[in-house]
Image (tube, rainbow, N blue to C red; front, side):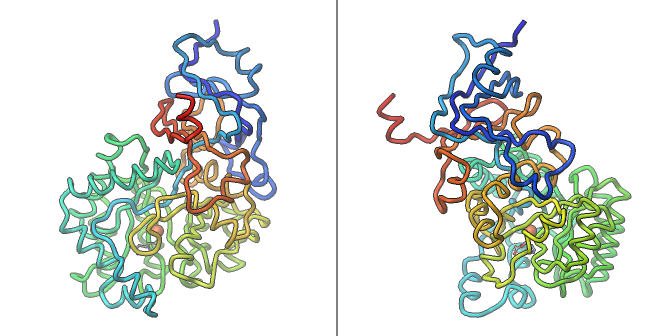
Length: 427
Ligand code: NIG
Ligand code: FE
């Protein structure tokens, strides 16, 4: 007996399946392959993909009834939803004044050292109620979904007390119930709050008091390893203690200087290391060997007007698994759009259109340990699917600063439909 499809997408000019990499991320030349099916179709039952292939292959396997919802993807691209594997979603306030200060010559770290930057957002986030944070975050999630993002990692890190970090993580938990986007929670040790005299004292507090209280509320622990923030030994101390409590490791590494953060990530078998603008050659080899995913964030380098971007093509050719993320946050990258990140990765990191699509889907799924269920269009995977209003995959990063989304399907349900003039004529 064939299974009935609740939803079927047909006639895709290009169906990007990205199949075959649920166990291992894509590296090297695999990044150039999107496993494209021309005139492809995908069938969904409930929230799961039940067939994927040509029209003939799909209709051989599934039945269609008058209850099956059909989406015509003629002249369009169909692909998995974007996975934004590094965001700082939950915060209060905004930092456009600091943006203006930076335009006048102040640096990101100068602003942080003088009590602004991350600490500015910490003050606002501490003062905000849970409901205020939920409402603000829901707006950002709506924007993300509209741009085709169906799963995100969301970090805390703007509370810096047990209570305020838990508040952010409870907000993330609540957002998971209220919004279609799935959120993976990460506890971020972001900077030392002003009530501590030294960074060392704060690190002791994190290791001895905070981690046990956060346990159960976050899947991963992350730390901002950077000069004047947390050094290598402090980062290692926190991540090792967190691992003993069951947290997986993420790390902000080598963003503004080469701290040896990539080597630390590899040594600790971290799931991912983010930024890596200043990664050394030794760091590249270490990450290739450990299989730690490099989450590259060209949006932050661009928004901080840096001359240095991560050496993505070198990393890819030397075997590092590369993913992409927005880093959505109020200081270094206030955009919810993965689409613009794809364009920046092509232009600034010299990645190819196929590489950026793999990096923003299947490899991003690996960066948050979800590649078994999302990141590609394969039978048995969750039906998180985009229908993009472009004829081929190259057009995705080619159009920039605009939204190419036609339809967003999350867990088998249509969540976003963008009406174009042509569609309206047909209504
Ligand atoms: O990933 N680098 C540290 N943290 C964020 C920025 C956070 C902020 O400025 O509020 C980042 O770039
Ligand atoms: Fe970040």
